[in-house]
Structure formats: C-alpha cells, structure tokens
Length: 330
Ligand code: A2P
Image 1 (cartoon, rainbow, N blue to C red):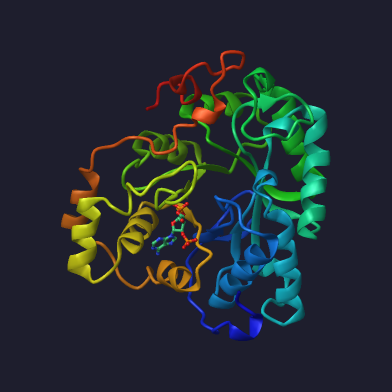
Image 2 (cartoon, rainbow, N blue to C red):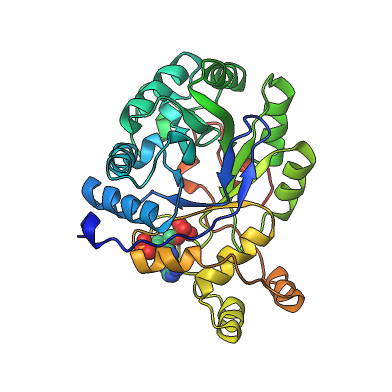
C-alpha cells in the first residue's frame, strides 16, 4: 500500500483538447479506473492520488466500475493536502449504466454518481453502452432476459436535461457505431461531444474516426493497451511483434508506443494503471514521436476488435449478434 507521504512529486505536461460544447480543457491522457479483477476502494483511492501527484487531472469512471466513491475520496484528499487548488483543474467523466438508461432514471442516476464523487458537476457524462436493461437492475453480466432496446429519444433528451441543469458540462456516448451515432444526431438538440470506444493499434477505428471527425465528435480511446489482465481484454497489444520491434528500436516500451500512436491520431486516451511506475511510463509519451516508417508499420497491422461486447448479446435483447451491436462495422 502506498501512503501519501511515499508519493513522489513529479509533474508531466499533458496536452489538452478544448471541448467546443463547454470550453472545458480535456487532458488528452486520462486515467481509467475500471479494475478487473476488482480491487478494494482504498487501493483505487491510493492509485488515483498517486496519479494526481504525477500530474494526471483527467479521470474516467462509470457507475458500474465501483470506482466513483474512491475517486471522490481521492479528489477530496488531493484538495485537502494541496495537490489540487480548484475543481476546474480536473476533468471527470462517468457513465450511465444500462439499468438507468430510461428517460426518467437518467437525471437521478447522474445525481447519485455526483454524490458518490462528492462533486457538484461532471465534465462529461456518457451513455455507457447503446442498450438498456430492465429499470433499476444493476447486475453485471446482465441476464439475457433483462436486456431491452434503448429508447434513444427519451434517454438522449434526459442526457440533454443533465447538461441544461448544469449537472454536467458535456454529454456523449460510448460504444456507439457510426450508424447509432447518426441515430442520435438525428434527434439531438445537443449533439454528443465524445464517443468513447475501444481503440489501439490492433483495432484502429479508421471508419469511426473519419465519421466522428466529419460530425465534430471527439473520439476517446479506451483499452489502448488491450486491457491486458482484465476479464474483457488480452495481452494481444502488449505482445504484438510489430509494436515490440518499434519499441525496441526506439528505446521505449510497447505501452508507450501504443499510447503515443493513439495520441498522434488526434484522439484522447484513457489508460488504466494502478502501478506508479507504469503510470509514469504512460505519461512519458509527449516529448518524442513516431516516424513515417513506424506509423506505416502500425497502419499495416491486421485489424480485429479485442472488446466485441459479447456480454451485450442476448436472444431476448436488441442485439442478437456482435455484428448487430456494431451495425456490421467489424
Ligand atoms: P496495471 O494497472 O497493473 O499497471 P488498458 O488501459 O488498455 O485497459 O490496459 C490496462 C492494463 O494494462 C492493466 O492491466 C495495467 O496493469 C496494464 N498496464 C498499464 N500500463 C502499462 C504499462 N506501461 N506497461 C505494461 N502494462 C501496463
């Protein structure tokens, strides 16, 4: 266990993107807080405090991760020991779980998340997956019989209410295909500012990135390292031979090559590490670059999804196959 006195003070300068909807500056590298297998709240809190000490200001959580409360506690402690002076320095994202993806449940769900986080407002509130489950059921995995199609009209209208009420600065989605983004754009009075999706050198999201760029939606990459060690990820990114070769020739590691590559594609990146040494490595990607040849090699890596969303398929729900979740964008 790390105590705050053990934390080594370092500060990395992390580039930012200004979100058009709010004018808020989003650091382009954020810390993911979904731990699998789960770790205790105290370990999450201490990891986040360590990240703050190292210079991280962007944190990604979700109602489903169990990390909202420890993130809130870490933020409180960071204020009290003077690591952070103002709420405005932070960029905090959380996500609406499927059981709350019903028009009338969205605002109460965000209020609960804010209570957990001990915050008055969020910077970004995302729909976690484009599917609902029976109201008020928070199980994971979701039982096959509990899936429901999401009513985009009422859910997105409630997301817009969250922004109008000042409970969040911006709203967006996660795990949305081009087709589903288009469905939201058709009905939206406030368009989504962000789509957070799996993106790494082995699943580069070229089509979705082009679509998002054309529509003014900023893309955030999750699982940039392939979510190694989790129940949903694998070591396929960290063990990729092309990346290993590039890493070796540059004197970097594969994680740094993957993160730098994502950053150079003009997206923001959420990377999870609860290990101080690896957190530091992940921040050390902004003072060097990949050359044309290296980028070409990465461009040619065979593509496939690492997180196909099998847990969201159900014979009773809206998605009976993985292809249906992604509208064939495989
Ligand atoms: P740990 O928390 O022990 O550092 P992703 O961000 O794609 O979801 O990947 C997260 C996984 O990758 C976690 O298991 C994390 O483990 C590990 N990880 C994070 N940073 C690094 C790194 N620099 N080198 C190797 N593994 C890393």
